[in-house]
Amino acid sequence: MSEAWIQARQAADEPVVVAALYHFADWPEFAEVKAPLTEFCVGLGIRGTLLLAHEGINGTVSGTRSAIDALLARLRGDSRFANLEHKESFSDRHPFLRLKIKLKREIVTLGKPVDPTAVVGTYVKPQEWNALISDPSVLLIDTRNDYEVAIGTFAGAVDPKTANFSDFPEYVASQLDPAKHTRVAMFCTGGIRCEKASSYMRQQGFDEVYHLQGGILKYLEEVPVEESLWQGECFVFDERVAVKHGLEQGEATVCYGCRRALMPADLESPLYEYGISCAHCHDSLSDDQRKRFAERRMQLALATKRLGKS
Picture 1 (cartoon, one colour):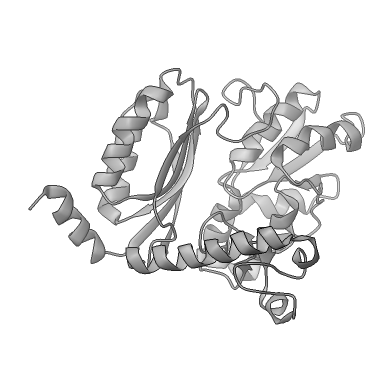
Picture 2 (cartoon, rainbow, N blue to C red):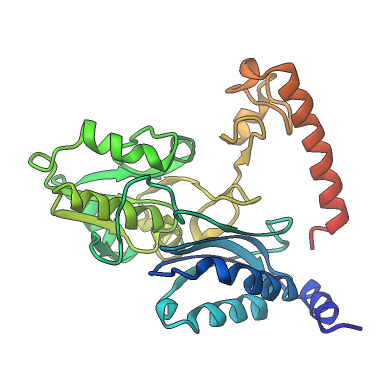
């Protein structure tokens, strides 16, 4: 009976910890880390996705308390990642089906050369965020994608209507002016996009740039609901789809056709078909796409049953 088998059985009896983490660092040997890190995570029954790049690490993973603690200790054992921060939530089951560790050019794709370890905006703690964004002199920008903004954002925030984070530099170039927008505050899900966005804006001549430390997730975890300026739910990139205050799972689901987050009212549409389409994409899908999505729906159901969703 192998040690890995014993750990897997123990894991089945423990609650699931979901850890979102990222850290920027100069990491030229990142590709060499993939194989041993994969073996380590598999041995502990960890699932989720980790992105490795020259500029650092980014991802969300799930596992038992002991498994997540072991992973964090391993990563922080490298002095370059000693200050790696992470945010936790809890689930009664794994929100991921398997483990994926990928090598990337960037751990979050902006498409412009920036170095968040050299220059970045001013961090603002969740407890100080309300005062900052309530100041009328501050332009508040949601740096997330349009489908994320659609189900929740901060009161008064500007939606750049970007489909991808790599669209953000064009938004800055066409809509913002350092001379006019002298105080800018930004936020994203966990903080990583704002690290790059604030660094980029500083390079473009914006001197007073702020961003929410720990992102929306940290804010929802630490700020009481009665004091909150957050409206709606926060989209997350796993099977939970969205979370709300206290990081409890929200009501949103996701359309498998267009990946748009859907609220309960959206599921009442006659154009909604689980695993295939919603009102937003129903008329744009080809017959071939419908067949492929139906096959994927069946394969996901089989995989879920096989893995037991422990």
